Image (cartoon, rainbow, N blue to C red; front, top):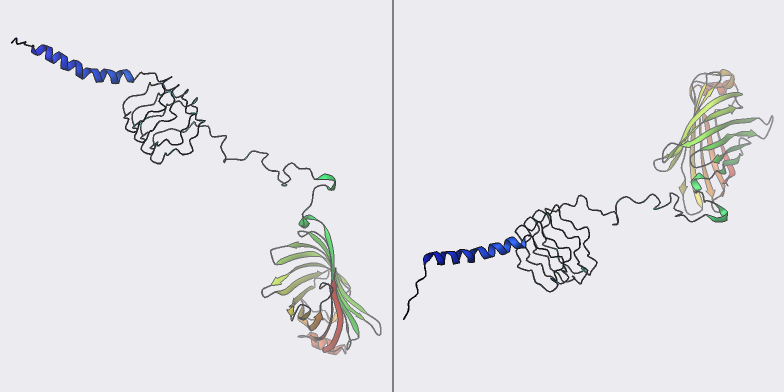
Length: 380
């Protein structure tokens, strides 16, 4: 039998060549070109791509049926070129749940990547993309963000013309008019007609108002006492409106400048307060309150109270400084014709206050008086 002896140098050289072979293969893959590689049926579930793949080209790579569930891409892929990568196939069942993409992919080029295929069932739930840079990503075609300038017309016409009737107007901007006669009645004991009316023209924001209240004697000299004002009306808040204008008082035969506030106090009490500055420096203050106690859809009880005060004495007109007169009335009304017409009957009471009582006695005038009243209130 022949015995062959192999020297130690030969064994060492063989082992070294076997160890270097995988390293050479790994180094060679770093510069591989995958432009035309077909990987449509490959399973990459356990593929480790943690090494340096920065210069790999995937421009023609078909990955339509690849499985990436355990693929590790944590290495440096900053210079990978995917510009021609074709992913147009059916990738609906691709699983990326365990794919690690935490490496450096800041310079990856996906500009020409075709992802037009079906990816409706792709699972990316566990995909780690924490290191990716989307700073220059163009998402201008996606829904959201600032709407275009012509998205909707400010008047909601959306480009549709208004036709022969022209642009419609909101009711609040239309000038309207109205007449409200709050009292037109007869006092039987005083033998006089009382009236109070208010007319206006304008919008919900600005109006011109003409208001007058007074009494007309139906016997003897048939004297007319009235206080008429022409004012500008404007809302001050939800429940209150302001007035300012000029007025004329026939009882004093003097003009005045008027200002006031009218509105609804708590518990639906209609309230008004008006001040008049006469040319002689006299100031008159009228305060009024009214409440509608509705018994049913037609019958309404309306109690009303009014106070009058002056800033200084005026013996010629039986006026004393302070509160001069108190007037109260209770009416029972029946509203008909859509509540625009309401006949009423009631009882009124009037009394002089403070020093005005003495002035009336000196002129042989009644200090207190009461009367049954009947009349109508309406608006249109």
